[in-house]
Every structure is written in C-alpha cells, then in structure tokens.
Length: 141
Image (cartoon, rainbow, N blue to C red; front, side):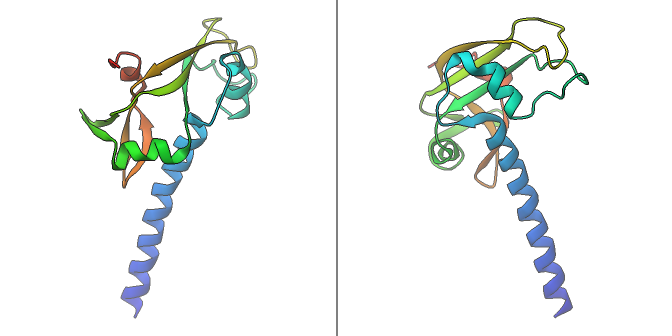
C-alpha cells in the first residue's frame, strides 16, 4: 500500500509540473484576439517586465487563437520540425518588437505587427511548452 501511495504522489507531481509548463506557455503566448497596438499593455499585464529591475524583453509573439487550436498542433495538426512540432495550418500572430533598444522597465515600448505564419513549438505530453520563436518568423506559409 505504501508503494502505491508513493507512486500516486510521484505521478501527481509529474502531471503537475507538466501542467505548470503548459500554463506558463498559455499565459505567455495564447490570446484569443489582440490589436497590434496593444503590445505594451499585454506584455505589461502578463508580467514579462518588472519595473526598474530588468532590461525590456527584445520581442514577443502572441498567438491569436484559442487553446484547443494551439494544442491541436501537438496532437493532430502538426509535423516534426527538428526538436519542435510545426503546425500544418497558418495562425494569426502579433509580433511585438522593442522600439527603444536597451530600455529598462517600465520604459518598454513595442511596435506590433500582425502576421499570418505557421508556428513551431516544443510539445510535452500533447501540450505546447516552449515557443520555437527563433524559427517562427522564417517559416514558409
């Protein structure tokens, strides 16, 4: 009985950590809709900068879709792409790039650009956990 309890505890800890990675990914990248002029607001609201303490994030990508659509890339609608999984369909994204290079928070100001691209990310247990952002802007549609 003790072995069963220990296994159950270990299993729940593993599932919990996997969910934490996905929850973080979802908070950072998935948004149903967003205007390209809201990069400053969305990056600030989602906690990517801490006032006065760090350099501004160089760039960020928001996926304009619901969670199920993004998850499907890891489950049904994706193909291997190096260590990533690449979606078979294009997604609308907002690419936010820092306008004032070298700025420190809270003086981060971003230029938003709406794009339609195939996206790539690392999947674990059927969920996206890390954006392949270094590749996403170069994927052919």
